[in-house]
Length: 104
Image 1 (cartoon, one colour):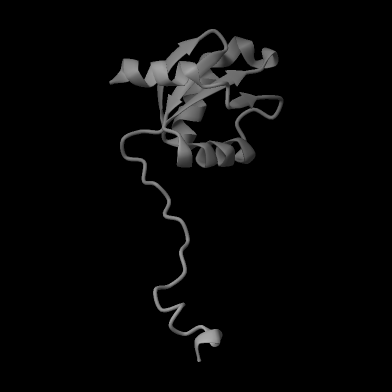
Image 2 (cartoon, helix red, strand yellow; image 1 turned 90 degrees about the vertical axis):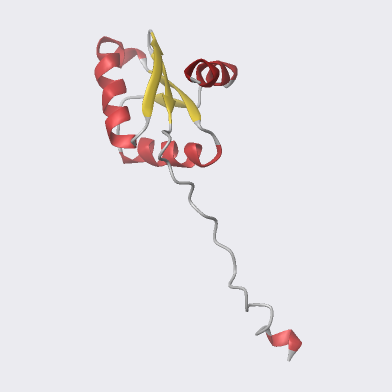
């Protein structure tokens, strides 16, 4: 299973680059948005953080609730986890069409 997920992530382009600000609220929000549609994510760490890539990956794993599958140099692959609950999309209530103004 793990090898299938890594293979799937290798086909994808790099989705998120961790830059000057490091792991902040904006990065975590973009992780959540990406995890709505994909189960694996490829992340690259910029050159200024190359010394502490392992620490940065552990911090992303801790704050996002995902699992790191693999790490190569300044890139790592993050899996959203088996317990990740998909966020339901907002739909109109079932009686919206019955109470609409044009049907009266």
